Amino acid sequence: MTELDSAVEIIKSIADRNRLRMALMLNRRPMCVCELDSVLGIALSTISAHLKQMRSAGVITAEKDGRWVIYRISDNSSIRMIVNSLALQLADDKQINHDYDSIAELVREDCSKK
Image (cartoon, rainbow, N blue to C red; front, side):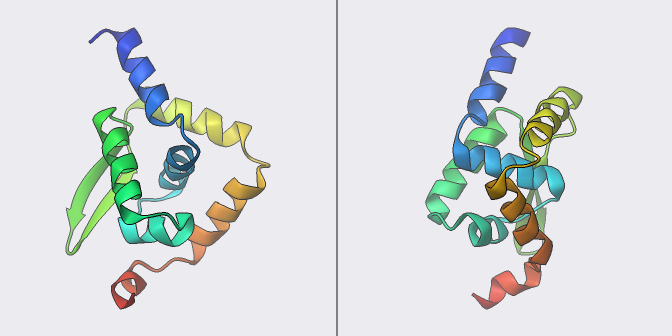
């Protein structure tokens, strides 16, 4: 895969409203699926499909932590630059700021109580 092909895959993997919201949230802090579900309010299967696409493109990574799988933005500097640029562009967006406020209130341990 060429660098151009890789860039296209990265952009395609976040070129969806929910995937972009997820990428921006994960850029703020690592999260598990149930935390993403709490904010997005979409089907878990849809969240999983979005995560799979973003992982395949290398935008996010996943790591097992006890009973949770924790997702985070990749350490790749190009990916971080793209996501940070989008975060800057969307700094005044009501939905994105609501997402940020929501994740600030989440407690991972509360996921097991659902």
